Image (cartoon, rainbow, N blue to C red; front, side, top):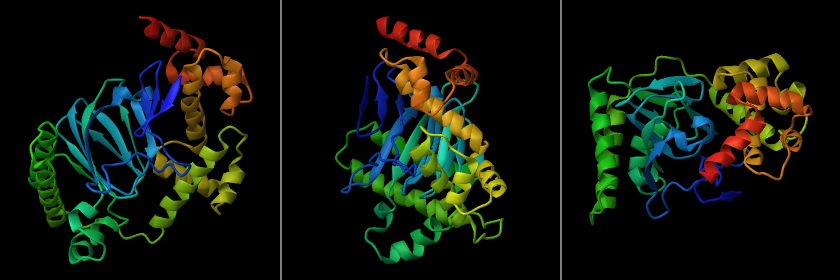
Length: 316
């Protein structure tokens, strides 16, 4: 029914994919190779189950350019609404997710690279002077290129050039890519606005706690999860744990756990040999009726109807 691929988890029934992560939500997908750590790919939100890619993070830098449509994109606690022609910068190790707007598809370009392609080798002057100050700035997790400033147009122009390179098969493709990434980085660091918000010494700790919560949910979603267990796991009181999670994730911790379980259940729903009751129990719902009620609310139909529709599409 499902297969694991090097890039993502694919459901053969629906041809939908989802990002593979480890328990901490770190993406396991390779972004390029050690020899050339750059991945430039055209994506659509409709390829993902539920029209969104799940929360994840990776050590690579990522630029996103919307080619058509609109999307909601969240990086750490900041939510952006991206429209056609706009772009977004996401720093290393930031938690991020993206979803459709009003169930309408969005086509976008993802440019992900290890900053090593910029600085060459560890400890180099380029790394210490031009890369580390930005990459390690916990207050600079993202930047929206919405053309509100003139220099945004240059960033978008360079991203489009990178896209054009992927459409060609020239001999100097890798070299041209590296040159454009250097220009892109030069443009970014020379125009990066001074940080408005004060440096928060607890910010890094908060991000680490969010990742610990995500890991806890991943490891325990099939079981009964108590708030006090999660709060104790990250050494916070229950109210502060909820406040912190809501601030970063945009939804309550309870809502996240429920939605996460529903997403996990889709892999079982796509099969024909597992009952709805078994599916509910497998993903942590003790009451199958409650599972069906939540499923209908989030997906717009019952689990049974969802399964029948998947099978109908396969037969067609």
